[in-house]
Image 1 (cartoon, rainbow, N blue to C red):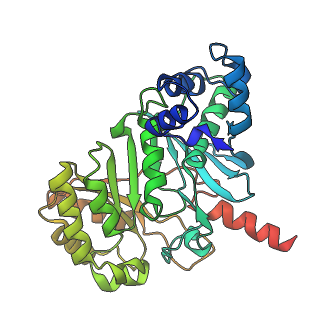
Image 2 (image 1 turned 30 degrees about the horizontal axis):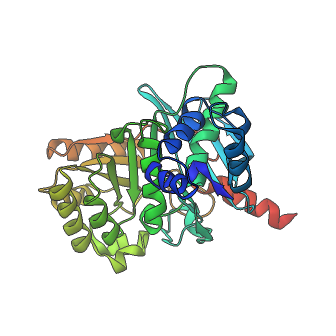
Image 3 (image 1 turned 90 degrees about the horizontal axis):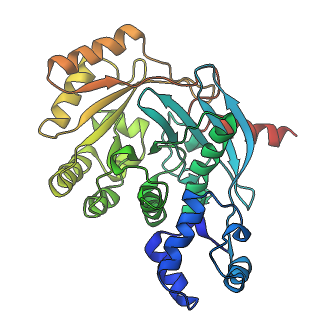
Length: 350
């Protein structure tokens, strides 16, 4: 069965032509699925009964199911959602003053193996299909609809479990589906892809002509420290990564966000801040500082508030645009991979 939620519009047009239909049938289906929120083909009253039967036999509108739901006092919602094959991933809804952001996973597990990340302990099981990523957003929208607030996801960050550029084609289809005005109509500048530094993916993405945002999970400004935190740095050291970033900026005309996790005694000194300023000098990017969210899965500790603000102050005085990321879900399993790791442990114990 072909899941229609995973079909980028031009590909759905090809499918419809292959079924002996006109191209407009794809737009018609998009209208029913995304605008009218139809959940079955029987609701599609302006499509002939005969073709509706074809759709029922060959296509589906399946969404992930919710295995676990946690809700924070600040309104953050964290879900463990289950796919048709039983695989599970995390999805998070964060409430900002400018809208509602969904943090979407792109893979089941992750092979990048960052030492600070709970997701890296899981190991990659498989890539997620476009419909499984779109499904994460739709499941959140359905929850919001049940709350009766008339709200929906307005921003998407592909920063959940997985390395998006290790699942490049599926992630790109996902982006095009949610960005399409007849799809979820989420503005390109409200969509962010975060990569740990897959250089080929960065260079390829620069040439897609998209106005989406790109974030680089940097977390260290020298190779020695980054090698310890992120084993991908051994394949793509900072010199090669920054060359790709500069190429991305030149070709796309877009600036990047440097994600920088602050870990006590590891990468949070003023000397680290000085190295960071030098590393990104000449690029148009800005720095998003992230106080580490501690877990019981490693020994890393959160930087003190004084060190976080001293780091920020140094960057600001060096004329580097920087912010401290707002924290969400401190009273639930907020760190990426925590909820999945807890669920896996419970399953093993049972």
